Amino acid sequence: MTSWSTPLFRLACRTGATIVVGGGLVAAAHAENLVERTNRGLVELLISGDGAAIQMAQDLANVVDDGATRRLLPAVGRGADSNVIDLRALRGVDVSIVQTDVLQDAKKRRLLAGGESTITYIAKLHNEELHLLAGPAIKRVEDLAGKKVNFEGGALVTAPAVLDMLAIKVQPTFDDASVAMQKLSAGEIAAIAYVAAKPTTMFQVLRGDSGLHFLAIPLKSEMAATYVPARLTNDDYPNLVTADAPVDTVAVGTAMMVANLQANTDRYRNVANFVDAFFTQFPRLQEAPRHPKWAEVNLAADLPGWKRFPPADLWLKRNVVAQAPTVDEKELHEIFARFLDERTRLSGGKAMSNDEKDHLFDQFRRWQTSQMR
Image (tube, rainbow, N blue to C red; front, top):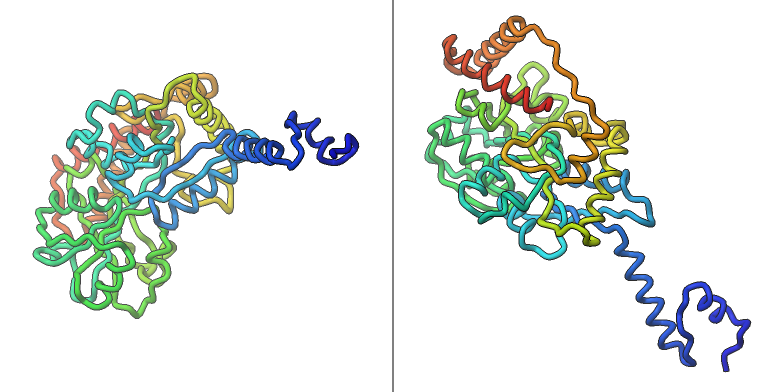
């Protein structure tokens, strides 16, 4: 017989559970409440599997989770086109971080099949660098011609595109990162192409006496439409890059994309709630000890060719006042030309003509304008 003064009865009064001798319905009600509490405000975020991406996802979860109405659950995907397809088709995935060249590639290959009008973006994020790690026998990127190069994750799109612009044809392999690293160390492949936000743990743990080293990527004018100049330094990888010989490379942007969620549903409201917390608390993400890549992010930057998620667009319109840039165009042009000359000198590439420099500067200014909108 159940006593009206027992803790079980008092719990039922608070939760509204129905008491039945034996506790069957009480247990069921408790389980239902647990499921509801655990899933309240849940947003599932799909990321790539490198260390920097995981740390940044953890940073974001730590900032936006409140333990009651909002929770971010990162999940590691396979990267590249897979993350775009999963965002559209995989049940439960609300948001994904995707490289901008992967988005372009998905459009070109019609992987979205009309999804451009339904998949929206929350914000452009940081840049991720292309790392070309080679064995001792490979001195320059041109030496990769005809050799085996491993593509994995985001590099499945970025590396072939960059090598094609350099007119370098390689034999692609597609092992996961750990297997590829073993093969590179054993001399079975010539290089690994890997896209990740620097510094990434995969390369930080390598010893300086391994003979492995990064290859410089010479700048080509046609790259500027999709990629931006970047550099790997001794601060990033002290065991692989000396202080007096940084390695030039290219980087690709990333964007936080939203699945095709129906308005006035719990999932839509959960993502809208997440956006409000993310944007409001964004300054905290740029403080130590958060990942330094957060410093690159401009929440107001546009992603050309894509529509912004309506709650994100509304937040920005209410809270961000656009400021026109103040810059001396002639001085900036001269600085950019000196940068190109210095980069060419360090990489050993062919000097650029003034017309080539002007063409690159025009592309740079268009990219810079898009970052500030």
